[in-house]
Amino acid sequence: MRLTATLAGLFLCALVFSADSPKVAASAQSGSVISNLSNITDEFAVLDLVVASPEKPVEEKTEPPKAKEHTIAAGETLTVVAKQYETTWQRIYAKNVQIANPDIINVGEKFVVPTTDEQLAERPVPVAPPVDAPPVQKTQQPARQRAQTNAASTASRGSASGNTYAAGYCTWYAKSRRSDLPNNLGNANTWVARASAQGISTGSTPVAGAIGQRGMHVVYVESVNADGSANISEMNYQALGQVTSRTVPGNYFQYIY
Image 1 (tube, rainbow, N blue to C red):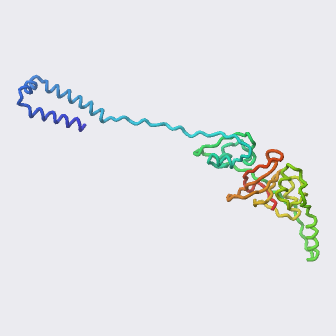
Image 2 (image 1 turned 120 degrees about the horizontal axis):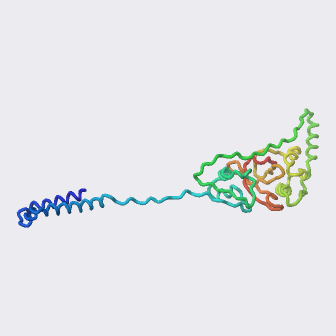
Image 3 (image 1 turned 45 degrees about the vertical axis):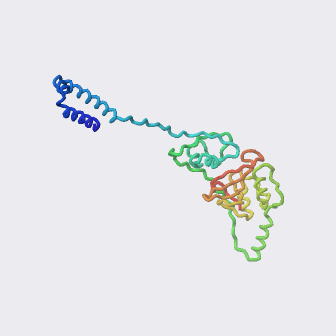
């Protein structure tokens, strides 16, 4: 609009200063000057409209991130996969409700990795029931008799010499990592109870070097993380004689120290 007003003003000034000119006077009498002025004003109005109406930039549409599908390979755990996709195993576990236990996944199993902005409901992790040691009856005894009883208890502890467990199984591997444990702990599901009955310390807190037991499976604790989870190694979890590693919640096993 400023451009139009300026040019129109200059044009009118030119008409005033040249009013004495015979040609201009003649044109004024015939009305051609007013017609020309109207045409020029219309052209300036069009020019002003073009200048005052810039084109709007085209907004680019961005597609939301898509969830990715992952297939479990040998030796992988949810923790390993979570680090690969820069997320947590808890979010993967919450996203995939078909995973009954985050510590038990199979090679070839497929699941979806959630996106970073996806809202997920927290899922509780299954907790192993505590293994109760057989009750110990305490009786008041003279000091000499207590010493004899303690000696007898030590003598009743099974021999730790060699490794008499079946090769390739989890019990054989656990015994090979803890050569100090006796050979009479039986099947995996009786290890904590029998160890406790023989005076070996047990508990529910993971410690590096401890043996973890849950149901018919025993493992060796390699290390413990700051969040309380345990890094374990084990045999016959995926295949007979095969040693694998994974990270589990600290309260997943009962432990022999």
